[in-house]
Image 1: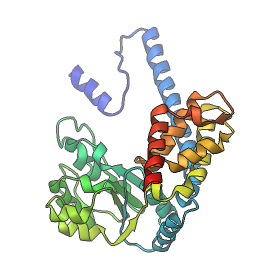
Image 2: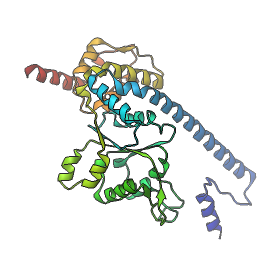
Image 3: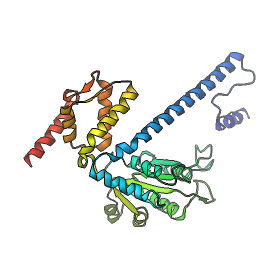
Image 4: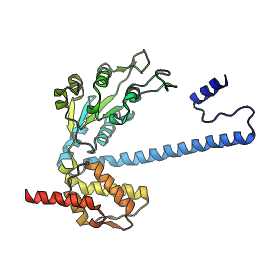
Length: 322
């Protein structure tokens, strides 16, 4: 009986359980611990909200850049934003496809609704259906409470499915039904649930080739490939690098409480000649590393990692011989 009472209390969200005969010191410690956890959770939520707001406010600048390639992408995004149609973002990893999806959401009539992003490869296979469609209490071992999935949470807004090309075939069929019918069933549930949202999908995979190879459903491919948007890699938009560097310097100066003034012209030239296999994400990671480690006012060539300098110089040598 006692075990069941404790289990019910924990399932309801209790963090501590004390008996009726507990002394005042134990009760006081439990209360102080609960209050402390609540304050930390509130502070974390406030910090995340402020950081998200700041990041989103600058994301349009990051995406747009100054290159003709990205100007074309942004024009297409802004044109399709007002239409209730599915968008497929195609491009290498690290090119900023999620930022584009969020920009599409902010420019759409659904901007006041939620924008729910799901990084599909990051979710364990046995939790994927629950993450997308939710589950009922008791649906499987460990399902101690009902969970609302991404499809429901995105109702009235935008659902962004990142790296959809990596989905297993059996999940692809369930995803297709949910998109086509506009309804889902939670795992362990028996009632269909209607939900409406704008779907934006992204992948680095050549889906047409994946269809030919039998790794991606043809009907799902045609269902999501309504408006394809090709996002260029950073090596094809090198004129955007100075603006990206300036933005990331500002971001990590604020985060690390630093005052790095900028990157020297020599270092910036080297940055602009590098091939960037990791695209914008690789550039951001490098600037974060440099700002974190430097104590100087400017970042120069000698501050760049040696292996990175060698790779950049090798790229220059190859270009010079072609």
